[in-house]
Amino acid sequence: MSTAAPQPVYSQPRRIDMSGLPTPAAVQQLHHYAYKARDAEETRHFYEDILGLPLYHIIQSDYVPSTGEYCPYTHFFFRLKDGSFIAFFDIGDDEAALPSPNSPIWINHISFRVDTEQELENTKARLLACGVEVLGVTDHHIFKSIYFFDPNGIRLELTAQLADAVQMQKESTTAHARLNEWTARKEQWRRERAEGKTAEALKPQNNDRPEFVPGK
Image (tube, helix red, strand yellow):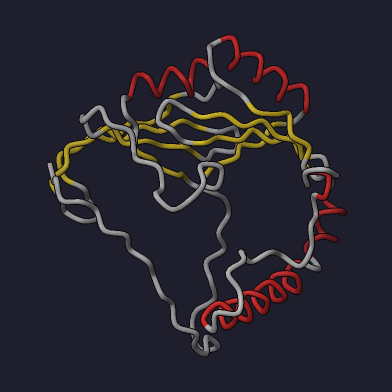
């Protein structure tokens, strides 16, 4: 098994004229998202017995097909209702993946959609009965959520959608303009920081959740 410390890999795609390139693939849905598991059975109990996601597929090998690296593993998949999967690797070291060293623990997470608010409450009750701490129900206006951690330290969210397709379509018409405004503000903030004119954190141009501002 490799013991070298993994190095982060960041792609830096160039901005080019893409008019002569093939069209993008029609991505239909998430196939799977994979994480490191501390222990396969511990993870199975959480996702299958508590959350109700069936264990559906297992791949085992000594070598990683994509890199050729020697690292014996069991790769196991849990199926969601839409046919997508959340998957895990148990490499036999009884260690969970370390949290990101430069990100708050609430940032990196995966969210699963459920159909109703009652299902949020039902899952919350199951988790609490099993000794799992749960935050929420949190109202995000367009959906409501609960938050909790799995045995591997992965932050999970269960979400019940409130906004209908018409409202979401309306929201989509302003998404590019709002992101462009954020990008312009960030570029200005970078210049001011480089010139020593500001030491404050960058803030967005809008506050969509003023009810969470202390004292409001």
